Image (cartoon, rainbow, N blue to C red; front, side, top):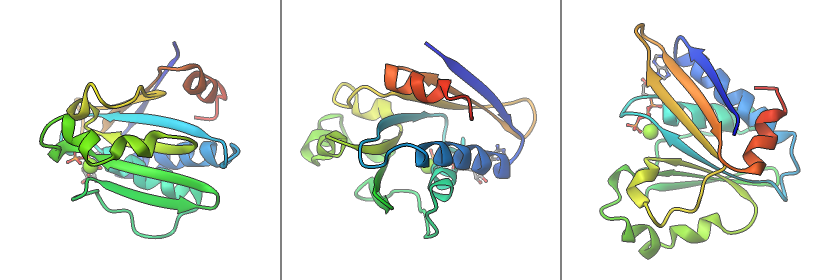
Amino acid sequence: MQTISRILPDEAATLAAGESIGRLLGTQQGSTLRLHVDLVGDLGAGKTTVVRGVLRGLGYTGRVKSPTYPLLENYRVGDLNLAHFDLYRLERPEAFIEAGFDESFVGSGVRFVEWPAQAKPYLPAADWRLTLSETPQEGRLMSIEALSSVGAALLADGTL
Ligand SMILES: Nc1ncnc2c1ncn2[C@@H]1O[C@H](COP(=O)(O)OP(=O)(O)OP(=O)(O)O)[C@@H](O)[C@H]1O
Ligand SMILES: [Mg+2]
């Protein structure tokens, strides 16, 4: 499937990349849009910064904090629900089910998941894998890989 890559020289570029994603999602029919994005990258790679940008691009003006206990922050923007998970502190994969987090993946909505491997094998399949990696300079390399036909169609839109 399809992959795009972008160099993000600084935090502002990461925010801007997130905003582009948010604007793209905003052009979709919010009440039926269903997208699950796994966010992959080391501690401090910029995963939360991307989600902050996405919410800004969707028109959300409130504060976006890194999800701490209970590892999930829910947002409503217009008719779109966005769930932001940070599973870094998930004690065991089974805790994903015990916390009822699987219910967040039912029906329409957008889901961003930091540290998805922590919930394996209980985390549903993602539509995109967004990876942030170090570059020789200060910045980051972002790649978005489509893992489903829904994810591929959104990437193929070409606006990112
Ligand atoms: N493209 C970039 N270049 C340089 N620094 C960046 C870039 N994008 C984000 N940062 C910085 O990286 C730091 C960590 O960002 P962030 O909290 O989003 O990381 P994270 O991947 O969510 O980390 P964690 O796994 O701990 O939740 C922030 O200080 C942010 O300013
Ligand atoms: Mg984070």
